[in-house]
Each structure stands twice: as C-alpha cells, then as structure tokens.
Image (cartoon, rainbow, N blue to C red; front, top):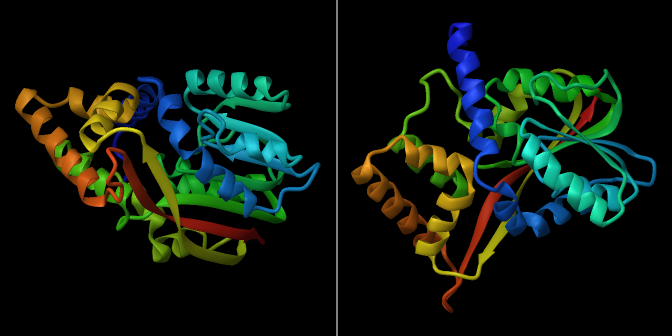
Length: 272
C-alpha cells in the first residue's frame, strides 16, 4: 500500500538523488555489450519509433538509433541524460533525450512502435504504474521489451544483501519481482495480446579483483553510495565484506579480473 504522500514524495526524491550521485556512466560502460545484444533481438527498422524508458547514459538508445530507430530516451537523472546526449552527438545520432519518470511518462498515448527499458524501470517504486505507462504509450501491435534482473541471479543476490543491511520501506516491492515470470505475467495481464519470457545473461568483465570492484561501485554507483552512507563504520565494513564475498563466489575469472554472468529476464510483450 502506498504511504502518505509526504513520505512517498521523500522516497521519490531520495531515489532520484541516488541515481544523480556518483558517475553512473562508469558503471554503464560494463553493460554496453549486453545492451547491444538486447537491441539486436528487438525488431527495429529505419523509421521505427522507439521509447527508451529509464535510458540512463544511452546504452540501449544508441544502438537502437544506429539501427535506424527514431529514438526518444527518458530518465529521472539529468546528469545521465547529459552523458547520453554527449555520446549520441559523438556518433552523430539524432536522439531526443528528456527528463521524465517511468511512472508518468511525458509522452502521448500509443506514440511508439517499440517501448523498451533495460535494468531501469524495474526500480520505480510503483510497478503497477510502470506497467500501465508502458502499455499506454505503445501503439496497438507494438512491442514492449524489458530486461529485468532476476531474484535468483547475481544482481538479485546483491540487492538482497543491501536490503538486509539497509531495509527499504516494508511496503516497497522488491525491484527484482520484475524478474519473476509469474509476477510479470500478472503485471502485464491486461493490454497485452502475447507475452514471451526468456532468461538471458549479461556478462560483467572488470579488469580488477572483486575487492576493487566493490570499491569501484562505492565510488561511482549512486545507489551503492547511498546504502553505505546510511551505515556506521562497522556496518560499512560488513557490507563491503558481504558484497566482496558475493563477487568472489560468482567470479569465473582466474587471472586477476572479475567476470560475472548476471541473469536477467528478457520480456517481450505485444500490445493488444
């Protein structure tokens, strides 16, 4: 149940601040290939109208534009949009980036042929609003494509660790429920004529050991910064140790690097 509006407004403000903090572009660099693979599985032709929800620094918007899509990217964090604009300009790609919320998209009804979101809209606090908005802005017969971390995968496990150390509000649904097939079927049960769900892997490959990966996230990933800031020194040490242990457990590299295969749910829905 949604809490009183002042509390909710503060929650939204805090979430935006966490994504503005740090330098998410440094983090996003390590999922560029996964984003390109996600777009390669999406039917985007020259002239296809594409909306990238929670577009971040442009990892999915840019390959969608390379494929000829007429792309609009929306995100709550203005600094990420600035990075996205710079990347698009460097490739001479015409992409419209604008500030906006996945729960209240600043675009018209049935405006887009493809509506996509990769590791983004899943973090909005009201999933029913997100689902309704993705459906609203997609034209009948169009495609809604999502990539959402699964609860069982590496990122899901990482989010569980941080939630144990710094519990979110009890009413707030876990973001990784968007990676649960049964939950997605329920959330997209109306307004969709066909739904396909497959499990995919995003590969993280960092040129340093797990301990340094944790330090890297503490420095550049806003949500990780926010979590650590809410703990005392002992709690920070415990969280760092638990996260490092998880990175070590999942690491498949043996040469001083850190290589992780992170599972996500690939969602493809046809708008009714």
